[in-house]
Length: 179
Image (tube, rainbow, N blue to C red; front, top):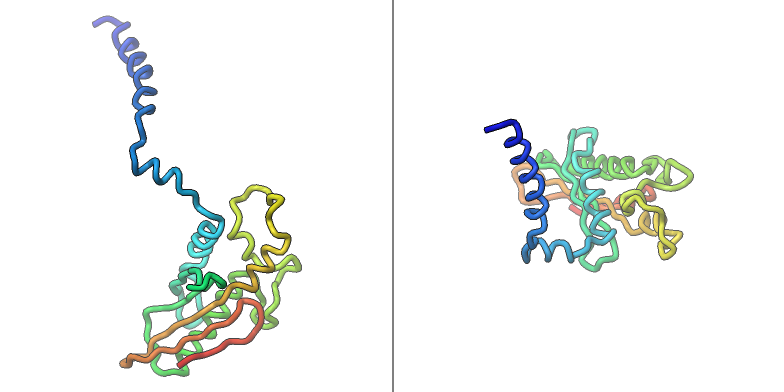
């Protein structure tokens, strides 16, 4: 084997590589390529990843799940923990702390219920792919989203099948409880 043989083999391998890449992607890959993700899907996923593991005062890190309501009119941000509250009052406290944590994470002052920044909350940042806004993007997108999001908390009571749930819009200071 002379010095040219390794170079020749490498050249042949490099020339053959593009042929391997031209292969048909197959039905599964074609299916996935042709199914576009919407900005809603993308935003829900980014928000879910951004909020999961949120720190809440008495609970530490909590689980957060972001979904679309059944009637598709609201985005639901559910915070919960696998810890069980000793009584309904403790569960209500955890619920309140969860709502406050979600609001704060989205740029809402929990004391006033208003956005911390004059430009609004950070909600709109989740529902973009990073490119400049298109002509068809509503000017009120962030504001509309702020009014469509509901924060929820849900905590089970120890040694019971009962739970305490709470719900609140992200703007404002009100919280509704269900025992």
